[in-house]
Length: 457
Image (tube, rainbow, N blue to C red; front, side, top):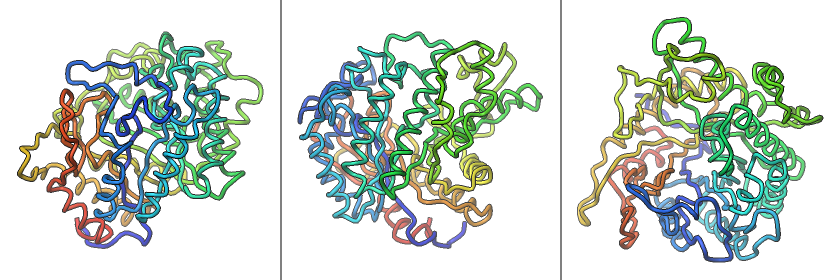
């Protein structure tokens, strides 16, 4: 391992979403989102309290400051600042985020805003089927422009959509708030396009009105062919075209990849309207943000054609026998992390920013002794070293490194058992307990990593 420090001004921090942290689902004038109607179940909490950061964020921020973090990526809850997603804005919700941002800045922590993390205002989901509708594209742009107007003078880094390529995959309708929409190929591609239009328009507005930076974000899973069969390699590259490069090319002013446009034309889909492709191409990202947790492999043996792949891609993934696997069956692959960083840099030459990375583990605290999470230290150490290798050996410009939920939060499925944090939050799915924040062993390790700016891993 190298013991060199990273560049001055490197950003160290933490990423979260609003519904996984804030709670206060019916306080402060907030309107309902699609998450607020989800109920608790086996190994799943509801979203009413989360980790109560609506009331406790100063406590979380103090821990982040003590760790030495200088960046925090959080999400504005659309329905907290605009309860129905299309009508009047809620001044109490806006004031909450004003205070929230000021509290970060007062602690020397750079705020990064994400505008949407799957929590469609319930009104827009019921009335328009979320991003299936161009009306909701317009609604989102009005909301996004308002947030830029309000916070652009204090927030330098922006994201529109969390993991935007998820709108190109199975599950797209759920992420888009299209609650009663059949997940056909046409509908998935329609959502892909509508979300891109929304991103492009907000990105253009931000660049016109501010000197801030914005990036289109991917959920990037490194994907290998399961075997040396040419067909495995071919369909692995098709996944890359439709799930990764289609959006990355658009984020970087190239427009959609030809294969995407060909599928639209050959199937006579009509969701692309005159002028849309100009909007898609007339944008740029200032940095390339992405999440990375794992890699997997693809076997093409049962793939019928491209449509089958795009509609059912998850059915063709296979575990890699050469990698260790978490209890959630996510395979640990630091070298895949380095490879993605290098591929994005070599293709686009834009600063790379990994803004989610971490390991989810079932942990229980005995109320007294510090949790000895050496596995988490090993995970982050190996991924940070892979990132440093990308910088020092491969010549990549990397902006920073944000872990996912480094203070325990609900998982994306509402499961409090899946913990990513270096700080333990004392609650379970069934019992809120006292929600006390308690550092784990990894907290002290990470504090030293940040103090040495990555020199000591």
